[in-house]
Image (tube, rainbow, N blue to C red; front, side, top):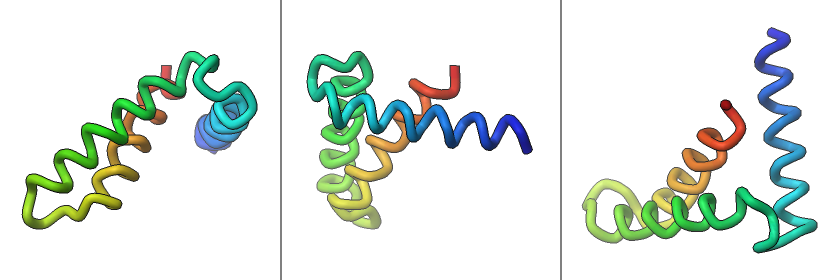
Length: 68
């Protein structure tokens, strides 16, 4: 359970850092890129909507950044 709490803490810290620093934060650009890719996937795939694609793409890239 400690690892899960650590992951949640890292996610909170990462999101707060991106909110404060904007594009200067090293995670902002990869997360925005993931959101854009997810939006394109949402537009192309018939089952996934654009907002779901944006959230999934951004969430995946954020998870990839904090799970190291």
